[in-house]
Length: 219
Length: 219
Image 1 (cartoon, rainbow over the protein chains, first blue to last red):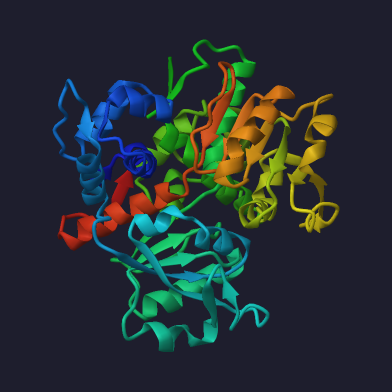
Image 2: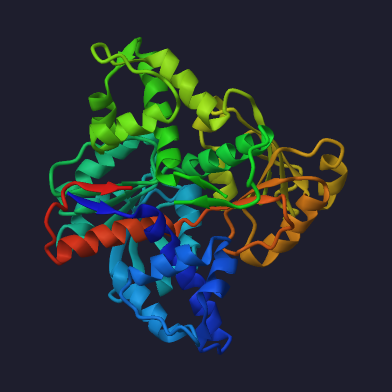
């Protein structure tokens, strides 16, 4: 069984966000200290994270911005476009459609489905919302690589079953349920309360007066 | 400097979600295997996670559901109510206001602010939206423990400054910016693309035919 270093992988989009902004600002090089300041973590953690991508840093001048962007994208598999469908055009789905960075990360949300007649046929953030009843007919010839599930908890399993039926193998699940899926289907469950749990532990630590609370490293 | 085990802490709300459902179903005990199945991780990881809360498991009958709920809540500091304000009642803010589990986690969003005149004075998910210009007058006497920032990237730093000015010390930041804050203020930055990065790495691993992809453990 492969073990992924999930904190490192979770940090990668943030590095990328910063690096792409630096590129726009015309900066050619970046040091691990600069990235550490931005991320509010220790430089040693940054160097370890970046080493995982396989790039070799130059001690004096730091990393070349363009090269580091390329290595991170390669590490994440983001140098190719990843096709996706989004199910559920409610508040959360709408928020995801407005997430600017996805395009530069290679995520292409090709289709959006909902069951609400008030939404079907209308555009949300520039995309037409399709009737969920047309999911099979629209997706089965060329299923997207990823499905993003943003429907209510009670509908999530049924939606997942239908997606898997048309050949979707990767599910990014924002519903607060544990999906039952056959072998070979990978589910990434997004638990929004996870970040709240982290913040709560930090809050609790400072309430109880534990030392070093001003810099809490997550590993 | 304190090092937090963030994957474990991120999993805690999911355990809690499952345990609270089990309690509703009248179940008194749970085994680590049962929790592992639900989480789609290995039982040994579950046992390590749970050991961190300080509970002592009983090998034969598993953990007592009520007791485990209590220990997890205590570990996260969720046995007390945590007061919060939410800034930005757009799609993401609306989605967070609809997150059912927050109440049972002790998160009490006492106030919601926005600058949009179309929203101010109206209710979103049962809460009145206040004008952002009243932030200081409404919060400064009794600042909430946590501020949840859901405004656009360009407004986030200014909003954070104002919150810190009235005495907020903990910020859950959903804007895609690195906030500059004085010492003593803790920011939890929520990067929605982090989960997408994890899913992408799993997708890439299976594309390249790496073994063991059907169970990828995150640590």
